[in-house]
Image 1 (cartoon, rainbow, N blue to C red):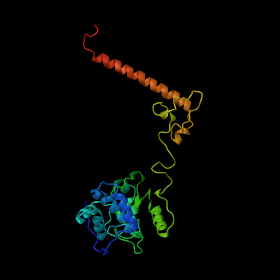
Image 2: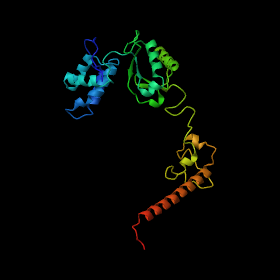
Image 3: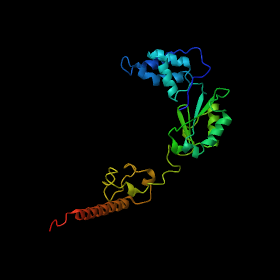
Image 4: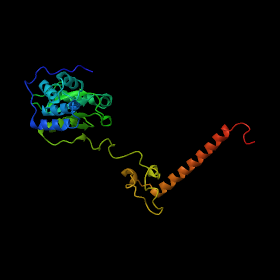
Length: 273
């Protein structure tokens, strides 16, 4: 882990606002009397937000005093967890994932956009709007490359849509959180392309209500939990159900034969004679 130090320039003081004090009281009330130090991480987090996205040294001392802790104990927490910023950040703090999946999918090109649009790493833009930092895995590998801006993820980035995203944020225009292409979540674009055969979902144990449908009726596949792509498949669901049941019966018959052969092979010599 890299060494984390407080910023060289610090404000002279930090005071809890009435709003932050109300939050502190709620957090501390969650713990038994004498255990208020347990609230140190969430209270530091709320203090960071109240201080403009970072933790100045006076704010760390204010949290220590509010929780009855030694200053050094709170400083240890603040310098250990990278979720706490020890130097000023922009209004929009961009955390660029640079771990292997994102790097393989184009994070380096996203980094170049950050350098060109914002400046060097940790630099706050002249108007205070942006700053950025390369971080380790943020857990959205399927949607790589991606960034976290403040509390939101922006995924499936390209240099073009990421630059537009920064421009929209700077101009106060609404932006789309999540994937920046047409897909939803981490689903494939264009809908499902695998596991769409209704026969895969025709087992009574897996899909309640599917196998109980009368043979003369078409089961409600969507209500039974089938993916839409499978439910709308041209495959006849009744025929698929019959095929699946026959396959299951064949499998059971084969299993019984294997068990009989194994039992015969392990029978002691002369047994039954």
